[in-house]
Image 1 (cartoon, rainbow, N blue to C red):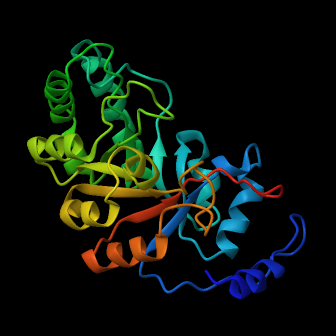
Image 2: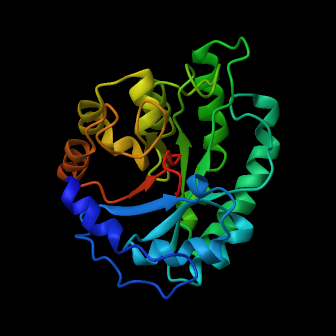
Length: 264
């Protein structure tokens, strides 16, 4: 975004509590949503009108209890969070509880028209990557039929293990892509987090072009620092966004950054 365009757009931002400004119209080539994490404890009833004004389609990483609040503003819950943890997916002893949680969660997501649910691999804790991969495949195989039947996609998030999530197992794109190929279901995909994979793999555009069929959802943030996607960080999001468009990707791109400016 050029500086003059940025200044022109921010000058029109309303103060919370005032009548909302005219809604910004997007081209729609990428379906953009945003997480609430960078605004801290702002209630959804204050946050969602701003999302609507910005012309975004939805809110990401929303807990089940908050789905109705987001949806009453005409927004999509682009990726849902289930409450509680059944234990790590890469541990066989967790699979009974994992299957129970996700069978129930997939039913709720289908009823609420939530297209995606997020999941995670768990940490290595000394487990070899191949064993963890085998276990994740086995666990996801137990829920893929109901996900396919209900039309809900379960996306396993790729996270970095160098800065934010030490010892996390699903920390490289190649590991995740192999998992998706082995599960072999249109409803089991990866959540490709560009921030995390810039730290672990780099080569973002080539990775997107070569593996987009394995990505069910995408997250953004600047690096270093996980801040706003602007000229202060190393990722060129204009080029990345154009590459995503060129692949024909039809999923959602959700912004998940932490605001560095005093007023988020």
